[in-house]
Amino acid sequence: TLWPSVHVSFVSAPGLACLLEYKDSLTDTDWIPIPLVVVGTGGVITLGDANSAAPHRFYRIRIQ
Image 1: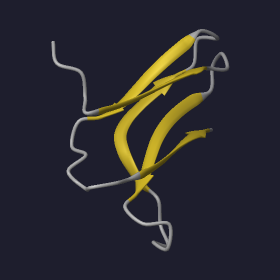
Image 2 (image 1 turned 60 degrees about the vertical axis):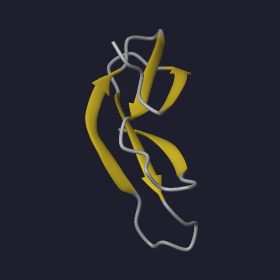
Image 3 (image 1 turned 90 degrees about the vertical axis):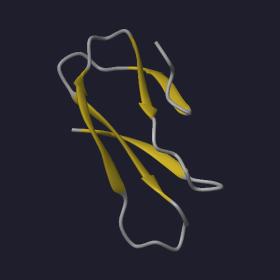
Image 4 (image 1 turned 120 degrees about the vertical axis):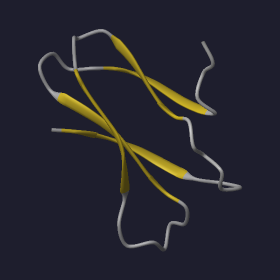
């Protein structure tokens, strides 16, 4: 199994949905979601971006 080109690990909150979003520039108005939503377990979750073709990218984890 190949890892995505970028992966982010964090401690999740049980029962809350976790979503990784990105921008290619901080001046972009909208965050773009990576289409994978994972429900938190209270443990460590790793989310990734397999299509990071930009020379740099900014990420955030949205919890809902």
